[in-house]
Length: 317
Image (cartoon, rainbow, N blue to C red; front, side, top):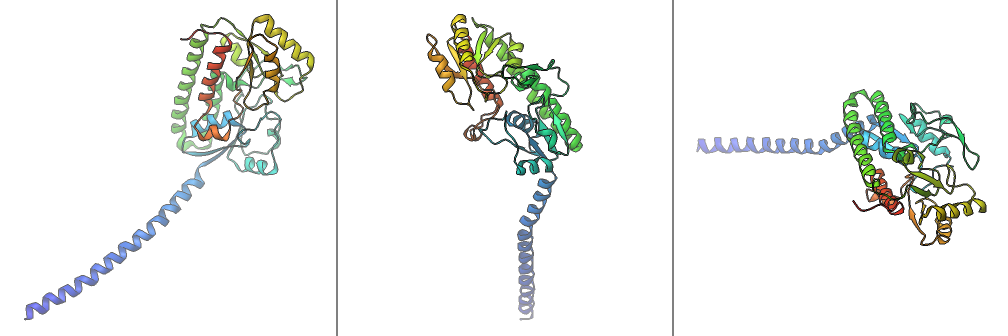
């Protein structure tokens, strides 16, 4: 009988202890998500805040930064960037960023007045020749370097170096990401050379003067409807000159762009025997739908290559 009382007493002690242990575990489980959220918030706040001026630089910086930085673009999807001006809210975003990454070469004339903590000019160090006046009277160098994969590698390396300086703890990570993306640009360069080697034509008509560096890299001759900006006025004389150029060179494809009205290109194509319009994107922006579908710089460059091959009458590889 005495032993029975002892056993019951032991059980009585064990049960409360078990309840205490369960309650303690429950408290730990309840506290854990809060602790995790706090840690995540600290990690988020410690990540570099990078603002880029427009889409190509957003794409390049995103490849280099990976998940160690927060990357955004000032210019929204689908907006033509040449004559874009920042709003007061955009200025605040750019000033609050750890890095403001721009193309340079006169593309973002507003950037110098932003007052950014660190302004990263991705064309610094490139020899783009002397400033020249285009058909619309703009004086400067041609800024469209990102369309040449070799020059784009320079931009990627400038971004890598800037991120490594701003966040030395993750420098090796940024170096590895930049190396990987640069290898993809090398592969793109090789593919373009190979695919265009079989073309019977070298002349093409672009909408605006965006493919200077691309053309020089790959031995092509660009004729353009507009100057370095696609938003200027096109005089009737220029339209007639373009039609005559197409006829004399046997050009059948007139290229438009994804961020401009294609009606002018259609008018010119209608005056050419067998004329048609295709898109040759300067990749100055992508639509929200394209971004959601994962279409970026590489995909757009490959689309350009396919459309160029048709216009240059290349044989299928």
